[in-house]
Image (cartoon, rainbow, N blue to C red; front, side, top):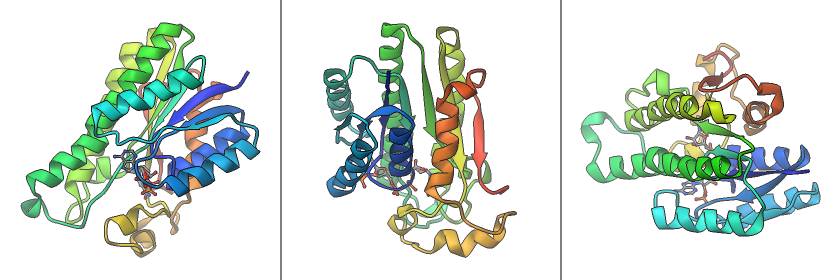
Amino acid sequence: MRKTLLITGASAGIGAATARMAAARGYNLALNYRSDHAGAEAVAEAARTAGAQVILCPGDVAEPDQITNIFAAVDAAFPRLDALVNNAGIVDMTAKVTDLTHARLRRMFDVNVIGAILVAREAVLRMQAHGHGGAIVNVSSAAARLGSANQYVDYAASKAAIDTFTKGLGDEVAAQNIRVNAIRPGLIETDIHGKGGEPDRAQRLAHMVPMKRTGSAEEVAEAILYLLSDAASYITSTTLDVTGGR
Ligand code: NAP
């Protein structure tokens, strides 16, 4: 029987690569995104071709009402939710801490932290209700331990919150066979860098990576799929770096 996986931020980048790989490895999919309908449709089409049942559940994870709608769509389409990839996330323009505005900080933490926690809460409630356990992978960042000075310390701090949340939630639900882990990607080739005003950021900083190259969304997806799988059955409440050594 195919397990059901909800991926937030599945219209592009790491979320999209994870969706394609998950479909090929036997999951049915609920694909969340905020605005890129065409991107989400393309991912859904590829996943259906791989044999998955797929629904699109658009919504801004920073809006609690929209999270309610996302999970209503999941509940209506699938008998149960087995897994979550809590991936939706944003950066912002390069700025020093002295230039950060209240509005920017609110948006950063509403999407990257509060949204992720509320999405995880809804997933856990469903996994507890059906009693078959589950697996959650939160997408953090190497920024959580690097700090991202002179670039986006607010983003780094939001991801550090995800690391701590992963440990705390993982410990809370471990006895119910719900595993909660995080991955910390490094410099990965996706459009997120352009959204932060620096499309060539990953390439520009690649020389700082011990492996001397950027990573691909597929290389991150491999780590996510591993942590979701039964091969990781004794792994919970921890973080895995996918950084080429950085
Ligand atoms: P991306 O290519 O920009 O994709 C981001 C995805 O998140 C898109 O599907 C986007 O949907 C969605 N999204 C953004 N805000 C959302 C919101 N408020 N509600 C719902 N969906 C939202 O980024 P990515 O590089 O794949 O990043 C994915 C995750 O990896 C993020 O959490 C990011 O912080 C983390 N990460 C990335 C890197 C890297 O180098 N790329 C490194 C470390 C960590 P729409 O376009 O439809 O809005």
